[in-house]
Length: 152
Image (cartoon, rainbow, N blue to C red; front, side):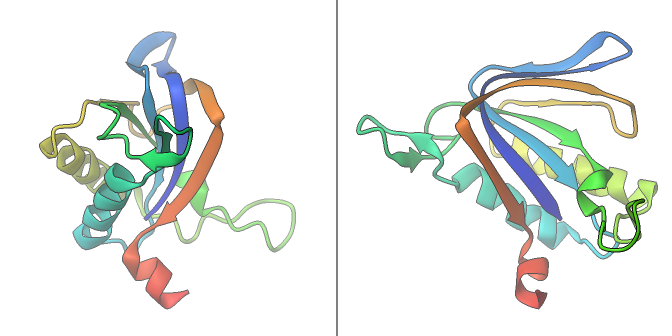
């Protein structure tokens, strides 16, 4: 699994001009699922994202997690995170999971994060979405699951 995290002071997602999710302080999580991903990958990413110390403390150091600052997550599925642009001018998405697996893993990820007590908002899986955000910092971080980091 691959996640692009953006530290935000506000973020929202709309589908067909209807608001489906919005947060204030927290993380916008763009989540991509690879065809070989497992629940272990999702568990690892949930733990990593919730514990990642990328929020400012009183000394203006990135020393606090989204949990520490009582923030929220806006989780948006994004298969294009697995775009391979190395050949030609049209990206290949061969590594992206088929939609059924991707949906199951996305929903599992969201459920696991919710089970940890963090407020979660979401987009709509496999929909064309409009995502708005105010990136705080700006801070943008890419995280990948254990399986990927061990093999690459």
